[in-house]
Length: 535
Image (cartoon, rainbow, N blue to C red):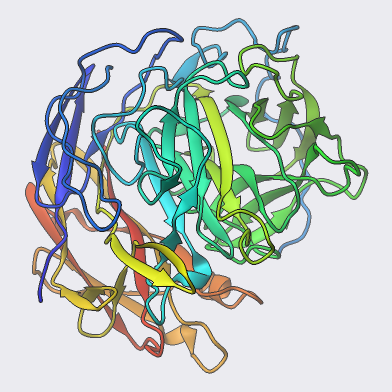
């Protein structure tokens, strides 16, 4: 039975956002600054209806009203840009936002509560954030098509049960005694190198200066077999930046990654930043030396305050010990500093949670993280619009665990979802606005079979918009090298520049087929988005 995936449009114009529902939904987002305050949630904002439900959990329910409104050798270098602003006692510099940053370009405190507009990110406002998920070892074969299991969660807020499926694995919770403000609960239920990643839909620019990223996060890591938090800056607006030599997930092409890691701390509850990575064309360089890391104290369910100072030549990270109430923090102390040679000065900020394999190693069915006060400084770059394709959202039960398949499979004949398999003629981006557009980028997480008998050097993706001729897009040398890294399980982050002549105002359909790809296990795509840059 044929079906097509459609799109939901979100327009952002100043402080007014208007939602129009068309088909199943892809989300247009014109990024805007959020200046939330720690107080009562404002009324008004988004008007319209949420997308209709899909699968067991759905892509949100109907509703009206809403909220207001980043293997190689080591590198050397010297500090670039101005020195970071000093942090006085109390952990915050002179500030002009609730995120504790000066010269704020972006700040979200989540005090307005859940967004009435639903997308892949559940409660997260799709005008501000994109949410990517990946389950590298549950991506294809059997009844799996990027299968994300259900997650058992602690109390969050009234009306939310203790078991959730995508997109409700990212929720905005009411205050607790441990965290005295509204905040994000992220439940990473994707097993075996699973990842949930929140990307801010507004670039972070640090050209010619030292920029600052700030957040509060439960940075706990019990052991490397369960889960942990990470923060990334990627040059491309990709959905799921991961790493190799432990996780074997989809690598970024060009990025800075900061993976919180308890190695070397020697006592329960201590965490460090011993795993800091720079990627250039998918090849990785690990920063820092072999000395003892500087550790800070964490506690499950409590927040640490993080400040990241970054230029192209240097990264410095400061962190506080955990806060008793999530409102007051000790002054963050330096925990990592290194010279580096970062190949970009403008990128996209991600706040990510990992699940190595909690079920396999006797833990819970998910890894729970909490985030608050996400922000960064610098110029406010608002000249982008984004559109998302929703997850396929078909229920599945594998090995006694229920979940949702969120990807689309494709082969030499076209797209399908799973399971059971049903043809999908096209994905669609609706209400696309090409006014003043100068660049279009198609982004997604993909899977290709990369076992030894496959010749991935011949792999090619063929895509077309709006029924026009197919465009052949061979894997790049960097993508091929990423697939061939020992232990990699076939997932990629792909970012493809689309000729503007292929697009049109209004609905744009997208078809994908393969060329010279081993189809023993079908390729798959998930987290499909269209990013438009304007004048």
